[in-house]
Length: 309
Image (cartoon, rainbow, N blue to C red; front, side, top):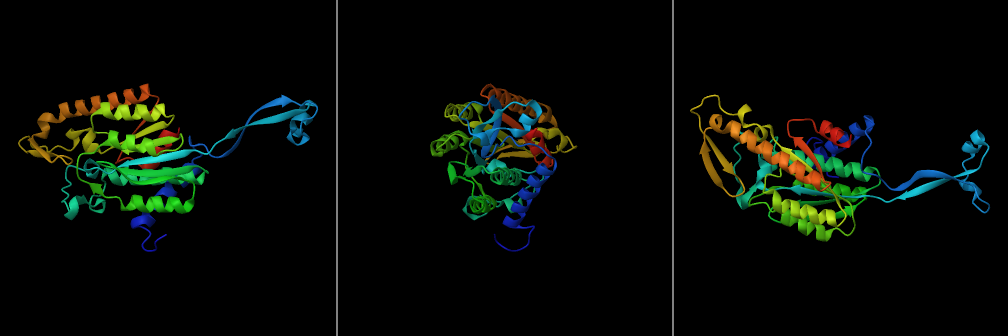
């Protein structure tokens, strides 16, 4: 692990992940990510020729009868994290005015509170949780295409490498292709598992849902963590109080700018966002996929606890 200030860079991201996971264990919240080993299933009566080592002698002491424990073998889980690094994930608040750097990159370090910050912390915590309980975690970043694909691994060293790549992830300009990236990802997953998508999902739902249909058809479980800021959910709370004050709304992925008066459009905007999110949730539920809203202003530990419960 790189050395240095424990509150900067990779050290900080790993520390955040470990703190979140430790908090989940301390709160005794069982994880839906089930690890390797064997799980007790039931009992059956002893029959001549059975291995006496399988007899439950404590149960014999209570019942004076011989019973054998039966176990169901559990397989280790593959958890694959797909992280949206497209330009819309750089948004933090209406006051943020990030400037592009050379090569078209927006450094996340200059955007405190941006959605990608939350996605990084959540992904690092989920990967740490999976590996700690004996499962495997993989990682892919996507924007206009799939990038930085890490196959699932249960190695702590590979976990460290994944978190290092996650920490270095930058926002990419250009229109995100969530559906195409998920289709690419599906072709790279050698076995069934859980695919966790961390994105704002501010996109046309139809192509995305077709991509999720393909993942479900291949036997994968799908979890959609929808990451949004308070300003994206309710524009009215952050709109200027002066009705004459204008606001320049910008689509960061296609560079379309629309001047508007937020006090006039706030109510309609909130209705459209709510409609989009509700339809997304219903469409995912119809496919037996989980939809977990994540607000950047809410503690991540509470988001994880709510999901695990």
